[in-house]
Image (cartoon, rainbow, N blue to C red; front, side, top):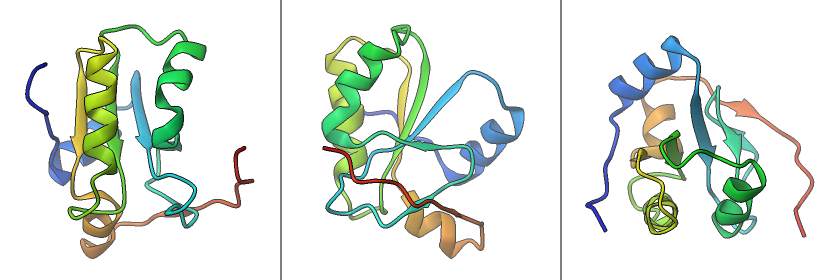
Length: 117
């Protein structure tokens, strides 16, 4: 398996402004998810990423960026590794996560999402 690729806040910000074709996932599990999402992302819990990619029929070369709570949270790394092990080739982890995003004064969206089974 190839080394974990990451994306910086600056790179992520630029990529989000470009728009189009980016799968941007908050991978926090129910236990840790507090309803916050970086704008442009959606929630795909770590324990559902394989199922989600399969149900969405995600192309193996699709651009996927995963994030979690912050640099001390391992879930984005686990998610990226899981996707790579499933054959996805264009996966990056935003290791700064919500913590870094908010510390730089960027907005987050709040969602009231039902807990998944």
